[in-house]
Image (cartoon, rainbow, N blue to C red; front, side):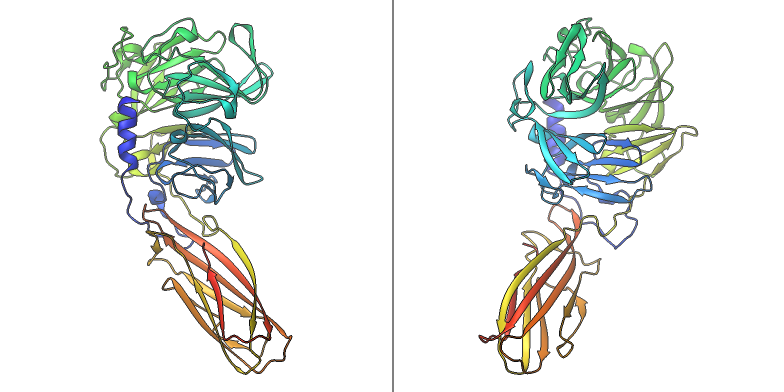
Length: 490
């Protein structure tokens, strides 16, 4: 993967600073860690929080409504809180399903936003060497999928994937789908549709003979598929009628020269880019480019493909004019969402005025919360006295309580003659709560309900809130003055 892998591999080894987390507070971009891509669908805004190995789903006000992924690098299907990703990048929404390029797992994942489940639709986990494809999705090895978009062709539907590792574009068939050269691909298969697999800047009327170089961004309109071809520092366009691959801007005519980069405005090939990672299409045919290493967003307009700066230019973050290696773009009406990767935030550009602002994210406390209810049975003695309830948080290696947020517990007992402190702060890994009670008769039952809301920061800098409820059914008889509820967050 050359420069791309070396660059992002290095980024993945950087440890973030623990986040300040305050309940229902505005935390701006600090909740993100190297966000790679952004997508908008209806009222949903989706961001791949790549450095935290998760995906966030927000509304248009920036309120996070779903956190998808545990927040640890790994691979696991399942519910939102247990699923694992490894450096997720491209995201797109199709109805109530979201598809994610799980880049370092060499897979494409499906997120069911109704059932709240994550599954795998493409990839075996192995870094694929296959340049052709054609197998069923979960049987097909692929190589570093970096971006994804939904395509409808004829009466069929699929997902186009910018496959950076194999220098190609692949198609996952959501249905049977008619394609170029009168070919129809079968539902569930994953197949190469553009690119020979040679790392080149080679345009060709035959899509399989064209050469791409680490395509890392993909978008489309009715006529063209646009590719941010990062290693050739070009944007390429693919004709949706026949697959012919052409240059839109950047690069040069020698297909073997991958060093024709720079920062020059101009028409078509006279313009110069440096390692573009994202591309998006505007409502009037403009093409927006995340010109990553130039720290800019550029726009391509008109029949001459005239390239000019839209925002950015100096690496930094003053909130309104600067970017730092932006990686993803999405147009939504008169707004352009920018994944400002190395500034750990999303910015929004008003396309009417050109004004850019940091997009505030509201991390509601219910979002990262993993609600866990445990029910257990215990015994106690008949004598009047004190029952001592103990529980351990089990925060996990390297994790600690967030000192800036109020972790708390509450205790409820269904017997009015039992006395206890009803609530308190969680200040250590062990909770000890005494409960006084009168003499009890054998066979009587009391129900004790301990609830906790715990704000945690991991060693990787990911902060979250976890909630837990433990319901203990205590039967009189058999002795015992201690009630051990075990590990609450395990």
